[in-house]
Image 1 (tube, rainbow, N blue to C red):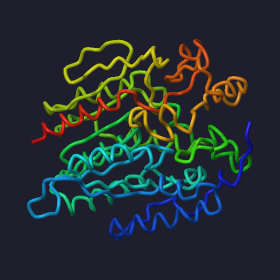
Image 2 (cartoon, rainbow, N blue to C red):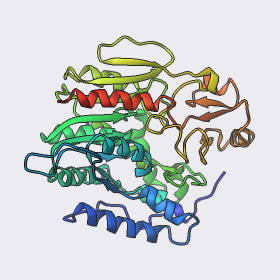
Image 3 (cartoon, rainbow, N blue to C red):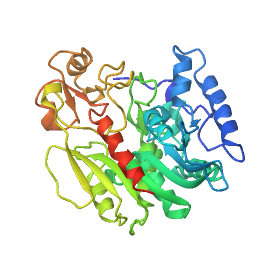
Length: 379
């Protein structure tokens, strides 16, 4: 439906991690400057830069101070594949209110234009996480990692290599994806001649804070990352939240992961329409008929209903599942009809009527309460 444009080429601005020896404040400042250049002349440039930039927050209120460092606790937050730090802003505010020093990185290939994912390697993402963890550990006695989707996988990988990590907060974890992604980069044999072959999806890219176009290399790198994840027991405490209906990743992999999470405080919030019994799992019924919500979704977990972009009355609607073949369905989905349904983009949901992919968590406030209880249990 859409042709390749300049946004589908490599900008040269963010294909590798460039934090190096910078302080975190300098890293944020230089990355924002790069993002201003990348989005120069665009409408809503300042909003785009603010939402895609890495950031840091100091804890609020009467927070606990460290023994020989400024802070007792710090958390590094990591966004997902094709996403941006915008998706973890609400989590950051939660941890700030609960006494954490917060840092959030921008993964290489992100925040600029979809073409910057064409040649990036997952090891560059891991470098960004390692850099952020080192910066945070210099300021806080206790280091925690929090990640959404691919950011959750990167957090688990880093925790397996860094004994300073005291706990994990994982949201819609991408621990297992479609195994066909293993072969996603076979296109390189011929995409030099047919550039569109490098892309799984070519879209308008209307979202300010997420790429809608998606290249084969992104899928291949994500698959390689999941294959690098540790398979042994997880000794540190883990808080996780996931949708059983997730259409992006294999949610059952999260259940299997939690069976390896041996710390007694570990807990998974499991959004599903069917109840599950597992020792460290709390089932939350995800369907809300009064709000025409059929199920939760991969894209929903970390966003509260009040979010101005992805929330219940947000500016953005996710109707991409109708493209490129059902333009009538796409038009109806974008029209905000009163009988609109919301949920994950499974065939059984699509058969029930016009469906928007759910982009917010109606149970977000309750999730924060669960996280507060988890944090209290850390001691």
